Structure formats: structure tokens, C-alpha cells
Amino acid sequence: MATQINPPRGMRDFLPQEKSKREDLLGKIKKSYLTRGFQEIETPVVEELSRLVSGQGGDNEKLVFKIQKRGEEFDSALSAGNELSDLGLRFDLTMPLTRFYASNHSKLPKVFKAIQTGPVFRAERPQKGRYRQFIQCDIDIIGDASLLAELELLSASLCALEQIGLVGAVIRVNSRKLLTNNISSLGINSEDSLAAMITIDKLDKVGIEGVAEELREKFGTEVADKAKAWLAGLDSSLVPEELQPIWDGMGEKAASLRFDPTLVRGMGYYTGTIFEIEHPGSTGSIGGGGRYDGMIGRHLGSEVPAVGISLGIERIVELVPASPTATKSIVLVFDSGQEAEALEMQGQLIAEGYLTRLELRQKNMKTLLESMFEAGFTSFAFLPTGVTDLRDLDVKPLGN
Image (cartoon, rainbow, N blue to C red; front, top):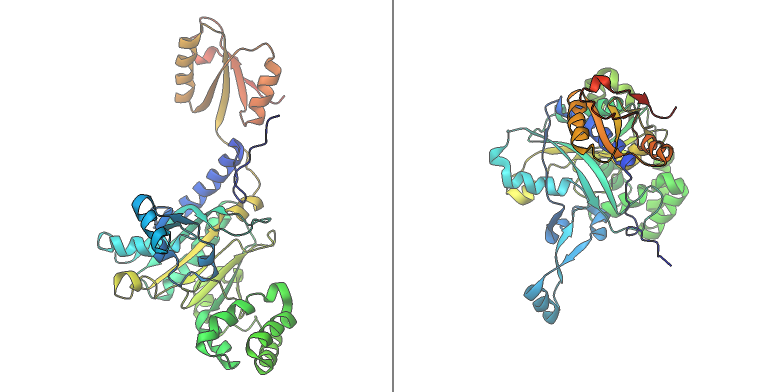
């Protein structure tokens, strides 16, 4: 009996039509970004392990897929009881970007606006909507400390989502500095600030009581009571003075912004404004990002301002219905012995803008044509003997 062969848990195969839909969405998003002056780059999926676990990646550093050392290096590390891995698969696109910029900044514009897409990997427990391999699409602005960088990212992201037909997205906005100050006012010291943020980040799942209880276990009753009063008294309609310029600068698009004083974002490298994109059709966020001014300096030795935002393609794909193909496509059916004529006719059809597939005539043509229709082809034609001009083809629609 044949055994069923599946991809590794948390990873997926994509059928042709699924792949086509994903590439179409990614292409439209990237085109939208490119028209705004962003430039596309590419980095390896593998990075030095020491970079990936440098303490800035939050909980994702615990989810790194490690790659073992090879050959003599592995044998030596094993015998010495040292770390057996020296490389890892990237868990996001920001960490590789900062290394890329530190390596190539002399060849880049003073203010660099980057697009990066590709797979990222996290060794977490697979569940609905969460995979071990998934695609992200990031835009980042490096070298600009002004508010304009945030405004460009937020505006460009909303426009890209509209470009693929995804309307109604809302971007939640907060500031790590404001959040840190609020946590400090609860009586939590700076060393424990990140641990408190992780707890507060669970507010949507466990509610105020759940957050207060966890803070009580970590920091005591006084902190928990203060946190409970703070959370109960929050008013997201009151945008703080520090963030108001973002609303002012976004103009009409400010209607898509919402202040969220409890927004955390899990990464440890955020230093200022943070954002998260949500959509009523999704149970989780479809993107997010923020300012990470201190990150590049760790590689370069001098501080460089940076801010970025990432779109989660997996959840976006689920929200956007497949659009009918605008490409003319045809299945050209021919008999054995007509190979040369079929290839010549295929060239003519391609020159006329047709996506053209060749198929030998079969006994059961109905089954063949039905499968071609399901694969996305829109028309077919039989190649008569001696026909050399595509105008003589009798092209018929598929699916009727």
C-alpha cells in the first residue's frame, strides 16, 4: 500500500492556481511600493546564529531553526561540548536587512527605502493561521529620523492593500516610549519592562482580569491593582500629544488609524512608534512594524535611524478572493506528427498575447479540456492539418 507523503508539519505545497494567486497579489503589492520610490533587495534565508539570538528578536529567538556545523567543525564542537550550530533560518526580514545595510551602506542612498519579500521560518507549534514557513513582504526606511518615514510607510501600506482590493484595514498605533513610561508608573523596574509587556500583550486573549492575575504572580498585588485600574480607564479615542502629528500628517487616511495604548509588538528591537494592521475579515493581525533606531548601530558602530512595516501574506491571501485572469489563454490540441506545426502556431499565439499550452489529441478529450479549464485556461482550438495562420484557427471557450 502506498503511503501518503506530506510536507513537514507547518509547511505547505501550493497548487498552480494557488501559487498564481499568491504571485499576483505579491506582484501588485510590490508594484504599489515601487511606484513610491522603494527599491527591492534580496538577502539569504540563512544568517549567523549569533545574530539571530542577539537578544533583540523577542520570543521569536526561541523559535529559530538551527543549522548544525559541518565536518571537522561539528566533530570538534561535539567533543568539546560546545554549541553544535553556527547558522539559522531567518525568523523575519528585519534582522537580515540590518546586516545587509551595515554591509552595503556605502553603495546605498543616504535615505534608503527598501522592499524585501521572501520566506521566513519559525519552529513553533503549527495551528490554524500559523505556519513554520511563511511569506512576508516588508518595506523599510533607513536613515530618516523624521516623522515623514512613518507617514510614508503607513500610507504606502494602506495603498498597497487597496491595490489588491482589501479595503477596511485599520492600523493600530502606539509608542514603545509611552508604553514603557506607563509600565514604569505601575512600579515595574526597567529590567522587568519587557516581561510586563509580554503579559499586557495578552489583553485581547485573557482580558483585564487575566492580565492583572499574571502581573500579580510576577510582580505582586500592588502592581496588579495599579495595572487593573490603568487598563480599565484607558480611552483609545484620546490620541496622545506625542502621536498626534501622525494623525495630522496622514490627512484623510487618518480615518484608518486607531490609537491603542496597550499595543506591544513582540520584538525587542522596537524603540519608538509601533503599528499593527488588522482587518475585520481576519482573526489576527495582517501586518505590523515600528521604529528600531538602535538596531543597525550594533552592526555598524554608529547609530542609524530605521523604521519598517511588514505585511503577512498568508493571512492576506485568505482575505482576497482570486481575481479572474485577464490573460488570454488557450490550449492548442494537435495530432501526433504535427509537432513542428504546433510549435510554430504556439509561437504565433504567444506573439499575439496568448498564454499557450500544447496538448496531443486524446481519446477522452472531454476529460482533458475539463482539467484545462480547472487549471485556469479559458479557450481551446484544434490544429487542422496544413493550417499555418492563427487566423484560421477555430478558437472556442472552455467551460461551456
